[in-house]
Amino acid sequence: MRETDDTALVERFKNGDESAFEELVRAYQDRIYTLCRHMLGDIHDAEDAAQDSFLKAYQHLKSFVPEASLYTWLYRIAVNTCIDYRRKPFWESLFKRFAEGEEYLAEPPSGAPSPDRLYESKQMGDLLRQSLARLSPKLRSSIVLKEVEGLSYEEIAEVLDISMGTVKSRIARARDELKKMMKKYTEQK
Image (cartoon, rainbow, N blue to C red; front, top):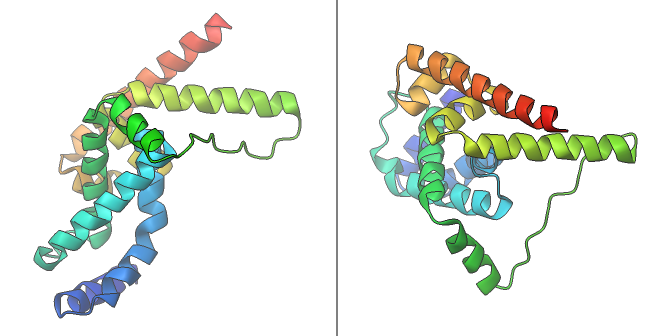
């Protein structure tokens, strides 16, 4: 049903109804932000990348041809935007945030039964984020789309514009590399 709604929104937008784009943003903003958060690992960069992704979608929506679903088209834009953000030097975004007077805030940890369990969970989450950041953008985007966003292999192939075999290969390689990194860390403890 969402795909039918998306098609109607795109048509309304193409016919000059700007409010259709606002509806589109409301429908997908949380998922696009989450994708960007997992791709980039930083809440500020994720917010910027999500906003930039929607700006790009707005600029190109009139030329959108519904060969693919709007959902996968938006994800492709977001993944490519995140890859571009990863190419920026780290200090560039850090300097920008401090220049704007923002403070870096760590996300609050989830409710855990005990302080020890909370600490362990936070450590593992940090390790996973660091490990994801070490993966190549190709592997990271594939595993995030599969494991975090829950996309099927077919949807990932469409979003990334690669074959199904390449999707499966990248996900397998990403899982192997993540396991090695996590194992290395736990053996050091």
